[in-house]
Length: 178
Image (cartoon, rainbow, N blue to C red; front, side, top):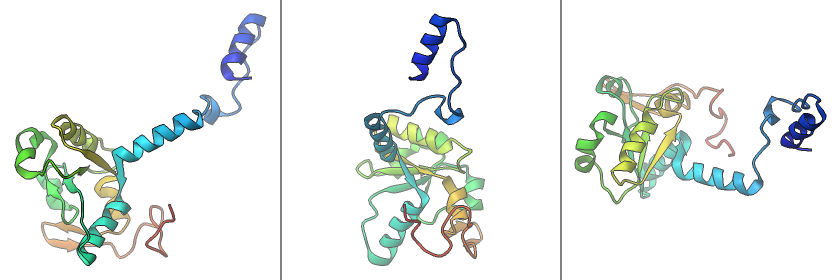
């Protein structure tokens, strides 16, 4: 019996509805078809730092086509503090006036900001989409780029952690297996 059926039966009989099995199932999972549509759409809107790093590495080492433009949407002091090598600096507030000057409309854009606790990458992706750009957001932002041990540029030069944070990236392989 579903949660809705439990509540309907309980109301009709005057008894309290049965408690869900646990908090995870308080709202039942979506149908497999609905879940497939949702997760496929999610991948159309998001990229992760490992995939972005792998694309940059293949571009740098093998001359592979990068196929996207990476946008750091943070402020100038934040950009100076650390940014992904090869990224374009375009703060969110400047997108309406500078996007067409800095970006190629025929090449998809990937945006990022600070990290999972910041929605700046989402706001910049929205601003670019509203201007007609194809856009994705890099999940994890600069925080996870750094935590996964990838190189950054700062106002002082290039830096890289000695090793990846073992809580966010594999420590014995370049491939997380996902």
